[in-house]
Amino acid sequence: MMLYAFYALALGALGAYAFFQVRLLKTPLTKTSIVLAIAHPDDEVMFFGPTLAELTRPEHGNTVRVLCMSSGNHDGLGEVRKKELINSCKAFGIRESHVTILEREELKDGPKELWDPSLVGDQMNLFAKKHNIETIITFDEKGVSGHTNHIALYVGLTYFIQTFKERTPVKTCYVLKTVPLLRKYASLLDLPITMLFTEALMPLVAEYIGAGGAANLLGGQAGAGAANPVAARNQKLRPLELLFVSSPAAVLQAKGAMEKHESQMVWFRKIYVVVSRYMAINELRRVM
Image (cartoon, rainbow, N blue to C red; front, top):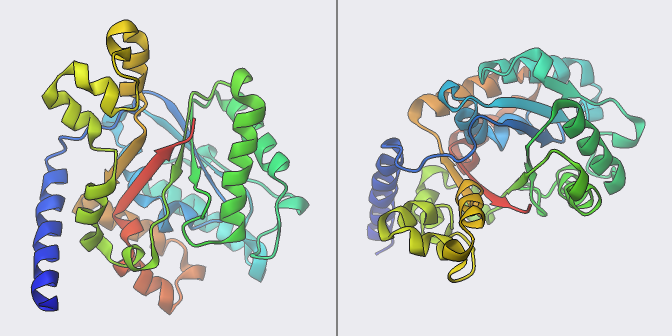
């Protein structure tokens, strides 16, 4: 019985993956300025590879930047890891001038290092104003791996939203959803489960059932679309969730980027690259 269940899941994953390769689900983030805020070099590819692969596609016309809060110097390899991050970003088409790595005593790399949320939020605010950022993407409250520094980025983003929401060029903030451990290491087998629970497919569903239902499916109130077409349009442009599923070429692109982090490619990370769903699937939740 368990074997049949595995076969059914595998076939479902194959069908779901084929569905995404048709690219019916369009990204709403186009012709905009985006910053991916991470804690350490290698976060950009270990966790956000599908997001970067999608948003840096030339046809989307986005300007994508990476803001890294530390150099990852926990083991004394900060200088090496900074170069690795730059090379990894280049694999996604992000040039060196669009990669910023902070070196602050208060933002040391380490699971026992507690970062001040106001400092993290302030850095996001300064960066957003300097580069006219419209969208911030970072970790959620569980940090995917539970790392203290990852979680600090979410708390810092919360501070940023509460403090600077009315005086920032940022219009949208998304966080990467953490999934349970078993799903995290199920690779593409997790795709049918993701599709079952995600709200990211709602815009596609709404397209087929008419504009009247679109506002409700996208989080608007009943009738809000008819009463306020501008609000309905904003909901369509900024859906509650985004789902990025990498093509085979994008998966190879992410693996190539991960290989740039030579200092981090120990045996368990080599396994991670093969089995982690975050190398192929990213689900983002809007928090602003």
